[in-house]
Image 1 (cartoon, rainbow, N blue to C red):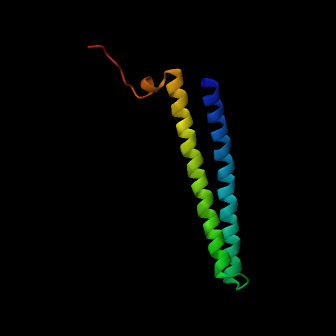
Image 2: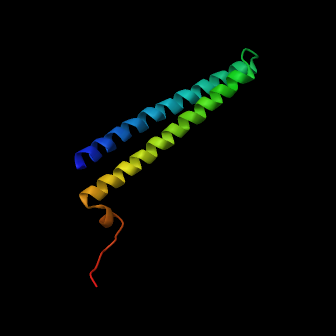
Image 3: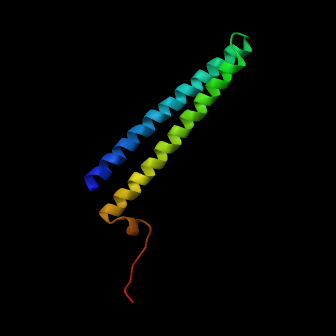
Length: 93
């Protein structure tokens, strides 16, 4: 399970990098489409589609970051570091 959790951490890190590039590309596409729209060489529909693409890319980035945090928490749990990380001590009564 620890090996799988480690792989999940690495995979989610890679997904974050890819989704950040996707956000950058979507932002560049939106900027280009906006310039074309202002020059009357594009339509509002195409501009709206580029805005939607950017929003979707940002959502994927956020999901990748959430998956990374979940993978880290799972790894901490499996390795017994979770309680120490948050300063939780368990005492017997």
